[in-house]
Image (tube, rainbow, N blue to C red; front, top):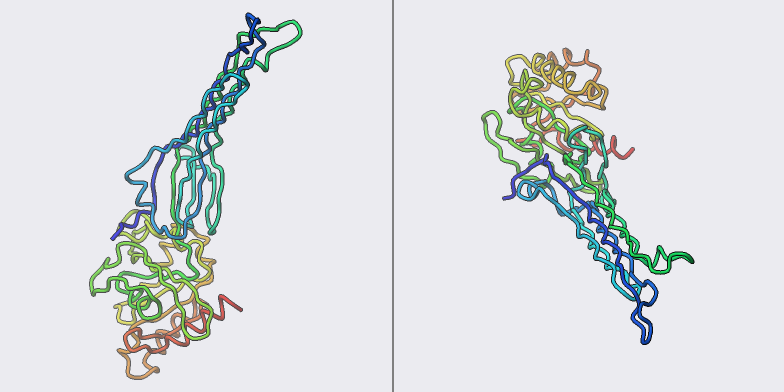
Length: 330
């Protein structure tokens, strides 16, 4: 299984242009014909292309230097040098390219079928034919090729999902994802079962399909580096809806809610304004819906829609899926 990598650093260099040639025609009975040195070929470009078949930056862990081909030198008889071959770098959809030193955003490959020249190859130098004039019939000069562009890049991968799942470890995110989608994440009753984001496609009946991302559970202090989830919060920044899952069996469900709120606030306050629903999981432990009422009443003050589900028994899943589909495709 290929390891999920969502960050990589690489060095790139477009090809340098080839030098122009210093050549003269060789004609019978003419000691020195006119200049006919050709131009150098252009250097190859560095081109980034999105590849829907890729889902990780894993390959960039082992290859970090990417260089396009240089243009060839010009030749006699006004023959230009061959153009350097372009270098195509394939990245997953959702990849962001930044300047590794300044963190400046250079490109956002957020859609399929994007192709962009990131670094142009150097121009080829002019041959000596270019410098001929009425007073300079036998020029002995030509231009060197233009150097290629060099860049130190940081690649970041942000999963593209319609819905993001949030919650403490063991809140039921992976179980929910496994029940409503084609994803089969690892599930167990201990913290940090999910070590990498999981992505699943929900396609049930006639509803339009949508994608759901499950990230590792957040814990208190995550914004300070505690636990694992904070590393993956960037994967929900582009979602259209966040589901905040709360285990009704938690000792203090309200505190669980506030913990996630605090971590979102410290990571990116804009996420608090994101469309967000509360999903109370493991509702099958209650024999009567009325037993859920006290907790629901407390959470109503947050002003967010509330859903009660049991992924194990399937309780409330159809309604939740229908509501999500209606929200995404009004």
